Image (cartoon, rainbow, N blue to C red; front, side, top):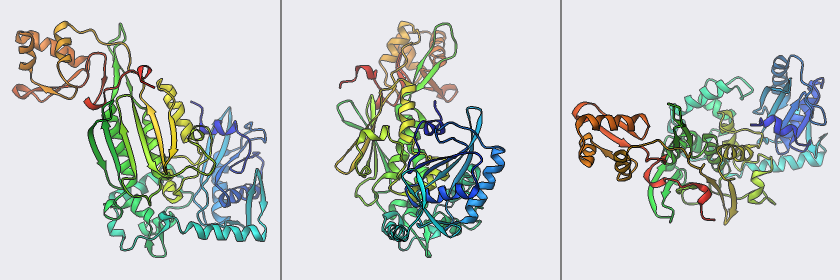
Length: 475
């Protein structure tokens, strides 16, 4: 799969993308970063020619640290940046991921810089005034509004510690991480003027729905006709909810299994790639309209596809199909998005939709579809086709599995009675089914039971979501 940096090298310089040669001075690099902060954010690639060909930076790791230190000292207010080194075509390129600044205007050595197309310019007096006015407007965002009565004691302390650990591990923070939680949250712009913002509730509240009822992820399973067969509400801090929701979806959609001829090992393939589920949910959570009523993010699982829906709108002039093509990262909730990014759950590069398309293709699934209507954005993902090769079963085993439902439990005696078998033959048949991964044994001795986890030739699924081959899906 093409790396995000390689993808960017295929683009032309723009308001959100800047190429700089490896010999470029620190001050010029800083101006470009300052300009990106004052506009839409973006990426600076250091060690790349104007035509997008990598030339590299000598002693790249050392120079990256030097650049990061320079930016942290000379930029005001101090931003959250990511400075990383990437090996590209035999060269080392330094990437600076720049979020859209939330404390505009930013200045470098007391000078304000802006992006005009693909050019970085010193801001005029009028441009500086406009930046200040726009910055004031961002304070009206829902995520920036204070949550009265919410305090540090209402935060999930384990989640705070987990976030701190992940931020330190990834090293994207750009500055030394404060010891005190309130100071850390202040640096994340979710603790302001002695008050926690709505973003802090979304990200770290022990019980988010006690403060805002729509802070949850709802997962429903359906038959092909739309009948609801399962309903789950995932609640808690945003990142934890994301991870629990992905796990719940995987459990309900499962994986297909085959046993290639002449091989003992089985081959498994998920219905949906982990990266696709995570990226789809992350996008829904950071772009959603949190002021809307009802459950915020809804996942509906059908036999051959699932739909992730969130309240919100696309950027002006965009259509649903643009999400799979354009490379801009403009989250509706940049403070929330920044914490997701610092914890390694999204990139600033704006390539999330491209990654979804590529991963679906790798699984052999149909291309994803985005739609935006009635103030909602929906992503439809199609499951990968089930692997065709099925294990060879004897007639007794085949008949028994066809008579059972996936997820159903049974005893050894149930199988013996079904085919009037001896105890020895029963044990042999069940051992074969267990080795094929079609059943799982639970317990030991007289209390032993078995769980049906797949039928012959089917995927391992929750019974509500056994998928047919997408090629046969009705259009």
